[in-house]
Length: 144
Image (cartoon, rainbow, N blue to C red; front, side, top):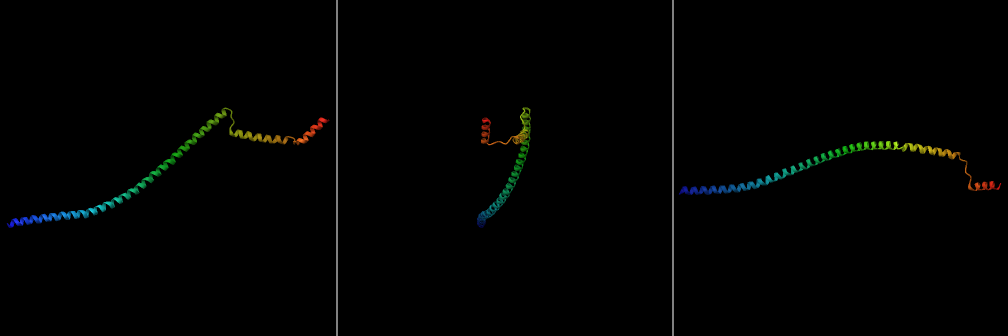
């Protein structure tokens, strides 16, 4: 019977050790799990910060690229528009010339010449007499 009691004691001792090992494993898992969780949170925060920094870099790069492309497109459009405008102006000027419509420069020259001639004509006119003097002169000539 001693063997049976020894066997039972060994089984009981083994079961107790298994129980204690399980409790130890649970405590270790809890302790290690907390450490692991804390480490994972720290790594996640680090990754999130790097992600934010990278996002800002990419966003700035995209914004610069779009701004430069927009400026370049505006310059291209502006240059093209200037060429189109110049061609339209030339075509309209040519059409008006064929119709005999004077150009802005021709009208300015003509206006300046008319003003010069008007000034000369004004200088050549005799001095005007007052309306009374004219009436007296007319009365004397009819009385004579």
